Image 1 (cartoon, rainbow, N blue to C red):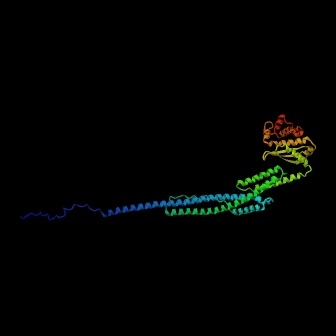
Image 2 (image 1 turned 180 degrees about the vertical axis):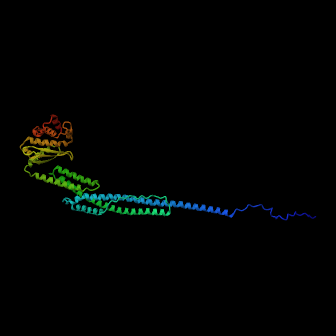
Image 3 (image 1 turned 90 degrees about the vertical axis):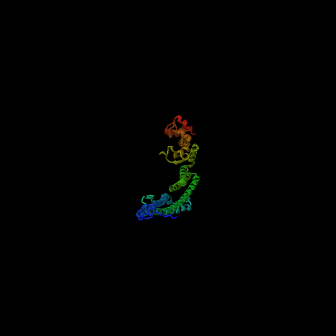
Length: 408
């Protein structure tokens, strides 16, 4: 059996595929896609540029900082050496000036020639080394550590300028450091030579103090002080003082002159009597060192008068100088008790340098009345006669005599 059925024919005006595919959206225009890509590219370029900018800023800041650190270090070093060099120049000039007077004097025989020559040579070296040098103060340049203007060419110029300043300062520092080194060496040599001279003078002075037994204590005190000052000068003074060296020489000459005068006095025909009188004075002085001088007139009084004076010193162990006129030696030779009483009066003046007697002298009984004290002391020593001071100053009270008598 056949099947005569067939599919219904489609309308002739409709394409067969029109109903089998869904409709599609329209495409975007091509120029829209271009702007999206361009925008993304610009963003990437801007980011890269910003990153490069930040990187340059960091590099510039580090370069400026490093250059500034180098300049600060150079300035600090230059400032330090400049100040020390200036001080060395001042010290050299002061030392040379101080020693000029000493160097102008003839060399004393007791100073070895080699020692004196070494000092002269050292002076010449320091003079040459310091010649033409002057202190030039250094003020560190005011250079900022960084600049807000980070344009490459400006940063490069600033860094180069800062580094050039540092280079110049390091060069100046080296020059001044070399000058300082030379000054220090020459100064050290001169100081050593001056101390050798000082030591030689002091050593001879010590010998003079011991050997010159006829010299006055006053002359020896001056030499003792001069030696001690010279030693102190060498122990820590900033500049060797040439005037102190001259004082040692002068004091040595003074002791030698006093020694010669003391020996000459022993040749005087009156010396035997004077020696007795001086020995008596020292025997009652309780250890107070006495210099005794003799003159035709004392305090304007000469022949026919007994006269004496005393100048006492509490320093240097306590000592005194007693000045007596020639009439006293005649009275002593004749056995006049008033002559002995006056000498006792003068020794009484000297007793106030003793601590145990000074308290009595300063106290309410005497109130530091020199003449009442000396008169009372002489009376307490057994000389209740006019020559004890009674004739010249009046008689002390019994209380004063008793208090002075405690000074034994």
